[in-house]
Image (cartoon, rainbow, N blue to C red; front, side, top):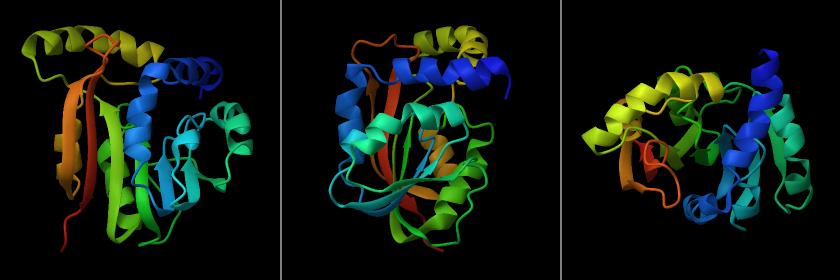
Amino acid sequence: MGFYSDRIVPHLIDVACGMSLTEPVRERVCAELHGHVVEIGFGSGLNVPFYPATVESVAAVEPADLGWKLARERLAASPIPVERSGLDGQSLPFPDNTFDTALSTWTMCTIPDVDAALREVRRVLKPGGTLHFVEHGLAPHEKVRRWQYRFEPIQKTVAGGCHLTRDIPTLVRAAGFELRDLDTFYEKGSPKIMGALAVGVTEPVAG
């Protein structure tokens, strides 16, 4: 990583993704987590306060050392053990069928090969395991999409490779998941080009 990506972007993400308007959806997406959890794109631990008591442990996958450092206070306050267990969501260092549930929040927009990351999540989930996610991406309305495509090059430069136009539900299905629950909406208080959210629970397709 370069200086900007390594030292500045984690702070920007901690502030932008840590705004109070994200808290209700974080609580919602974390509510059904249970057992042993893998979280890709752990960042600065903004989800830690929302882990329910049904979670036994969390394997945190996060490439940025600074992000992990920014999480220290949240980790110290959590009764749930969290271990930094990987650096790259595209290549998870875990055996097959390891985790009961998986979590991704505002992460799929940035991973270079999101298909590889989703297939890795599918691999490490136990049979019957579920992936819980909230992601921003391609808006449902053409007028908003046009602005997303215009602004995306700037967003990618400023926000560490973050894409605005990824169709998250389609990507999830293509990686071999079945959407059990999906809600799409514009996040209140956020610009529409950045706040077109998809919140879902999905499980690997059998076979």
